[in-house]
Image 1 (spheres, helix red, strand yellow):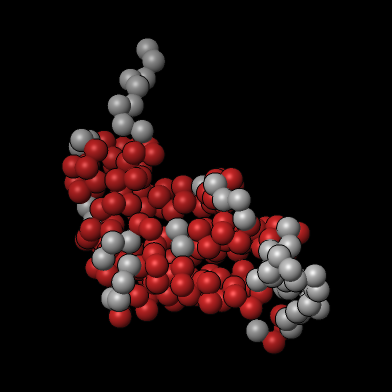
Image 2 (cartoon, helix red, strand yellow):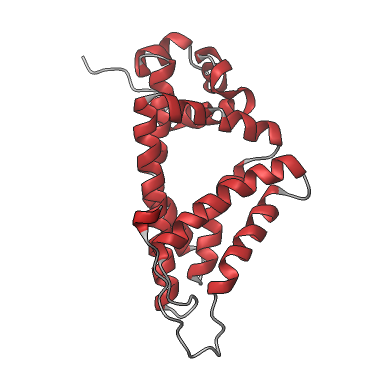
Amino acid sequence: MSPRPRTVSDARILAATARMISRVGPGRLTLADVGGEVGLAPATLLQRFGSKRGLLLALVEQSVASIAQHFSAVRGAHTGALDAVVAAASAMAEHVRTPEELANNLAFFQLDLSDPDFHHLALEHSRRVRAGYVALLDDAIATGELAACDTAALASALQAVAAGSLLNWAIHRDGSVGAWVRADLATLLAPYRRSPNDVTTPPRRRRDRASR
């Protein structure tokens, strides 16, 4: 006898989990909260994911697995590589509507730092995101949009500015979060941008990794 087909996909369940984390944070999240979003009993979620922790790990694993597709989609949607860089770096801001939602999502960071399994996934997520930025920045250099530079170092700065900009917006609450992040990213990238009339190529900037 073949197993009964699943009426609700894992993808829908994980999307509901992400929404509920934005509303209540990972600490207060329950399987009943998620089940209520998708019309499943908590026991069904327990059977499928093993525990609340298993559900949260599955959510992070999905996020890690989707990074390459995300960067590919962003690049395909933009003519310029630098526009794609800004779109990719500000993507998280597009899903944050209030400082409270940001606080609930940042609570997940405590798991990333304190739980070895979550930290392993967080580290892999960060490495893949940085690699995505490097690929876009290399593309921007090849197309003449960006001056030659240490793209690995600039990608690291992109990660830092994007994350820090979210925090600044949550504190100052001036304008939309997306506009705030994009403005900070534009400031970071401005010294590296090349105008169409710029025929000179600045020397490649190098960074001493041993000093970090």
